[in-house]
Amino acid sequence: MGNVSVQFAGIQNEATILTLDGLLSKNGIRVLDLERIDKSYGSSIKYFHDEDKALAEQVLKIASGAIPSSSGLSQPKLEPVKGLENKVRLHYVEVWLH
Picture 1 (cartoon, rainbow, N blue to C red):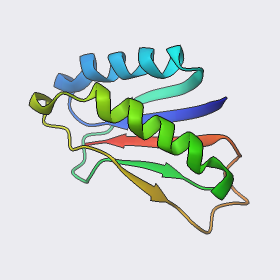
Picture 2 (cartoon, rainbow, N blue to C red; picture 1 turned 30 degrees about the vertical axis):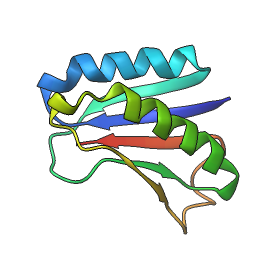
Picture 3 (cartoon, rainbow, N blue to C red; picture 1 turned 180 degrees about the horizontal axis):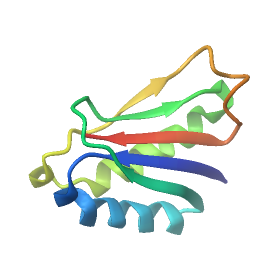
Picture 4 (tube, one colour; picture 1 turned 90 degrees about the horizontal axis):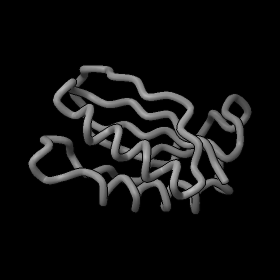
């Protein structure tokens, strides 16, 4: 169905990220990598092709349900990224949780 890369902040959020990984996989979405990057910015689900908006919306729904309010992670927002269509493959989104 689709592929995602996940970036997240805080080692304390590792359990939440592993839960998200399992939920994405269970829904037919392949997690290419999980990477901890301790920076401060808002959470988002980034997609690069208009054709991948439905995939990004599905990932957003799964991610939003996997993040407990006590985690300190902000709820992600859908973010279309334009200008990289020729550099980023189809059926791919990025999950940034901070």
